[in-house]
Image (cartoon, rainbow, N blue to C red):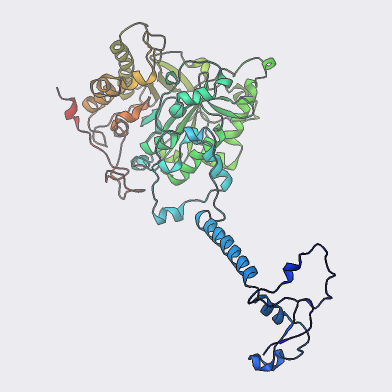
Length: 537
């Protein structure tokens, strides 16, 4: 039996002096309660070993714990509180494990207006993918208003260049591209949110030329990107513009390029041509207005493309030369549409790269003009960029015809075997607008009409699709003709259009499909025949 000794504190310390403010009721015994002011001695008959039954008059840790068991209300409260805290901690670990990076959010990321189509990659792909740092991933996510999301970049045409032989000259290829590629997410809501920066400008539809993100374009087979850049309001970074329209305040050119680098690491058979042009109203203003000089922009871009290991590993470090596809796989080719005099006239201080097509030689609104990009080798670029459809105040059908005629004439020239042009670079813009027309003709209207039935068929893109089906054979290595770089607006409304361009390459049947299967069951690299019955009279 437990013996009760004279009153003493649980710890063996001297009794506390009486507190006059202490309620006497607090010392009253409750049923089933043994006061903490009594020491409990355990006899050998209690069942503990003899070593624990000695010194019956001293307090031990065992005695302390046993005494605490006789405080039912106090300890049940502790138990209940501890259980609640443990449950909260368990739920936190289950739904947000430590080490998971929270997504970077901004008001612009909420404007990314398309459904995410995340795909589950197979285990072997996950195992072989190079691991990206958290900083890099966050920077790529910050660029989502321009890049979109990486999970959307793995589609059936992600690796189409794997079927083009290594020894194919890039100038002999047919490469689909996008004009003002970064405008896909430029909505009226975006414009309204940035009015404090840009001021009042025409409606967003006058500037939007695409409806697919850059990552989606890569999966769709696009390999030429027309990017327009300028200094962001802080004058510290290069962002994206279309004329005076600022497309995003969070997406910077360096971060978007990181997205391209990541994609190329996972698709090493491909090459990407990137045209960079200064296209914002802040560029070239006097320094007294706080704008950076042309020199600053040129040197910033030079450092971005050449002065880091990651840049040198992903940009083709050749000046004024376009070699074969085999030498460019896994890399990007810079199409220089900016003034780069500070770099090219740097007296050996700089080592320029890319294909120089500077503004002073780029004919405004030209249907067919030539630029020499390598005088020593007589290498030239033949360009069609008839974008401002004249004359104004003519019917929309006439606008379609004028633009299509310019495109068709240039494609015929690209496919010809004239000795003067056979090894040269061809760039054809299928894009355009007539905003001063009444009513205005937007880029979308010219490209796809209303986007429905007869209007789509008679649009510029619809006519180009019909031309490729009727006059350019089956392609796919059978009867292919060089198109050069063919640049579209709003291409996705004609699902077979990009495949028709790709078919005009010396494609070889794949020995084994690369990447994951496409949604329609075809290999990502398969030649896709097109049913031309829809064009029969």
